Image (cartoon, rainbow, N blue to C red; front, side, top):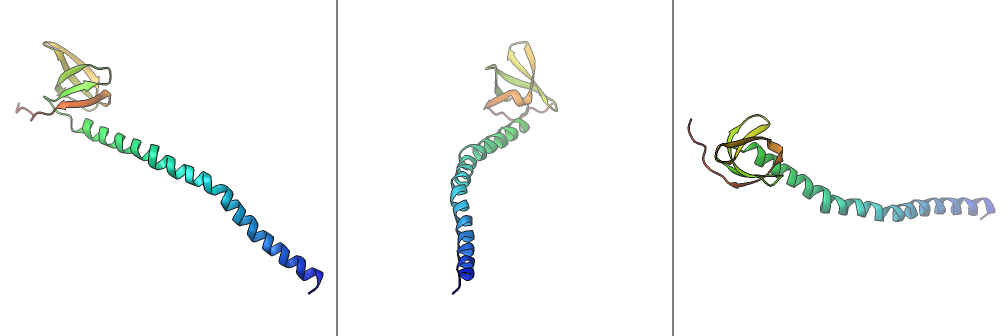
Length: 111
């Protein structure tokens, strides 16, 4: 072999090792992204989906808790608002997305 062919083999072998080295260096970052997805992002998306389903199924007569801590009974449901009776004769309008929990589901009354 000549010096030219020896240098050719060294260049091609070094090029492949460079790519492998790059993949080894980037692998921890990919692993961190995958861990963040399964531990943080995916559970948050599932909670958001279940909260959205709970808000969409809200109906008259449900006992709810708002994110401000008010307890009350839903008396009317509109598109994006709900009227909640927090005491006898005291009704407030709340944005449906601020309802954090439905404590007691009841069958809707026939009006």
